[in-house]
Image (tube, rainbow, N blue to C red; front, side, top):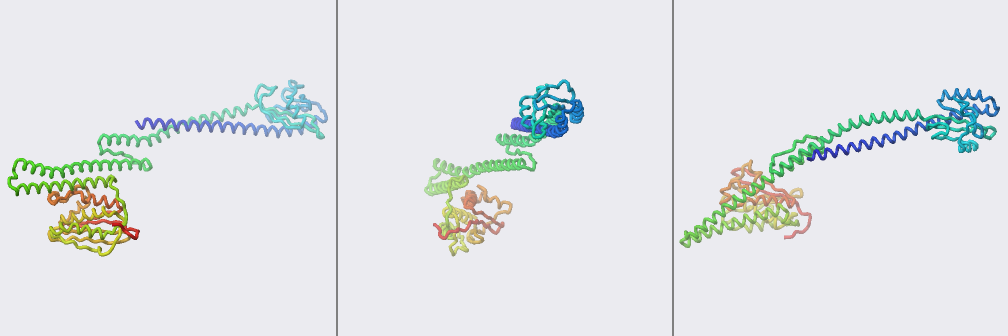
Length: 476
């Protein structure tokens, strides 16, 4: 499942990040704090050693009794928590705090003696040859008249620093454990917050794949996850809509094909059975067969055009086109149909050249479909008004008939495939119900939009808008 896999990955990833961050932070802080404490201790010992060297200088110059010097060192030792030695120029111990007799005659390291005789201050850290633990020691030379007459050595064990570091590390570990526990809880709910909606979308996606198109995700989060859930639901809505359109399309195509095919089959069977006994009957049967064949041809051609337009297979190359010329040519081609029905066409705004950015053949197809619809639904002797208006960089073309009109609640449906206000009448007039769907697809592909208005009993107004061409010439 998405949740279990992604949830585990998120928890493990966050846990590793937290652990690595805390570990690096602990090591870095421990290193810095330890160095800081040691450095401060060394600086303190250096200052105190310098002060003590000034005090013991008198004893070394005057070669006074070491007992007085030991008393002085013991007093300083108690205040500083260190062990202090006074050595001569050769490195021999003259006096020492704590156990004086134990260290009398001891010698310091040769390297320290060399630095001492050169008047250098030595600051060291490590294992002392005298002590079994790690210590800090500072050697400050005692000088008189520009020459080294001895030195002061201050020893300090780093046990206190070590104990302090242990306490700090323990405190850090306790804090890290609490932080990890708290972070684990936060990461758990954060991961659940992220993976929960994904699991819901995964479940709904599987339902959609199985054909249950009514399932939707229930995500109310006001962030990117919520936006994703909303987009997912919109996608599901579109899938459901497309599936419904597909089913309706198959049903409509089947319905539209069945009627002419049934008629063709019936009349062919009648001719096979010899029912066309006279030449008049045979001519009538053949005329009906020819009419139904033409109807099937129109339906198939319209379906092919619509399918190619929707899939983008049928390319539409845009170029400057004189829209008024296209309108006049289309009206001329429809004159036989206009005369047969006694319908008159009234033109408005077509007396001048108006160039649009479109495709000549496709615009002519649009005008042919609109005028053909107007002729079919106009009463005998009625008028069809075709007008062209240019406004704000757009050209609006409208075709108005004086037919029965379309109910307001059905007006938005006229652009759908196979939609017919009066199916029986449309079938009689030979309409396929695809003309306006093709019109909308062509106009929208050309960057325009379609419009429709109607009033029952007073006719219908259908039109479209196309952008004005910016060029100076047009191609027919």
